[in-house]
Length: 183
Image (cartoon, helix red, strand yellow):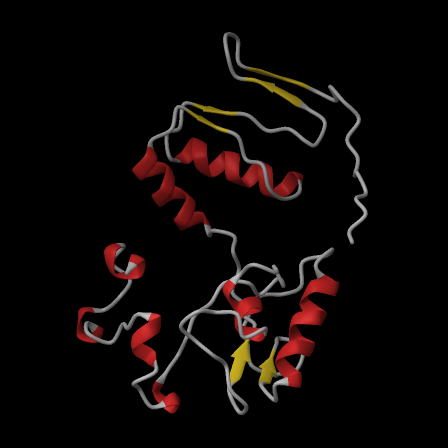
């Protein structure tokens, strides 16, 4: 539905989108399900499908699951557990690590995607927040190309003052990680 609203779903494929409760009436070899959760998030659709806890759908022996993402550091354990659950159900799991095909889809926008976004939203200020210094600077440069009046970049620990005089207080705090014990 969202792909269609954004103009990415070709009109010749209209009528080929089904809600989850309609899929049970279709031959399994004609079904493609796109689900969230390739980082092993416990409440995401893919994890619930692996545990048979998705209300309207069920994965079956012989099905295939393609992970279109790479492992984000810190998620290894969740992803490994998810893949094990799928493989225990005799589901073929395809990742970039076990195929010669290019299947990685990035969640990061291209330069043109950013130009489009800034053109649509027309923000007065952009603060790139994800990536390394090179990525942040490139994002700010694209915002400037898109005629965004102001761009601010910083790092973990910097304080961005957005009310009154807009500025960045560098190294305002010492950033770190807080370990949490899980049960």
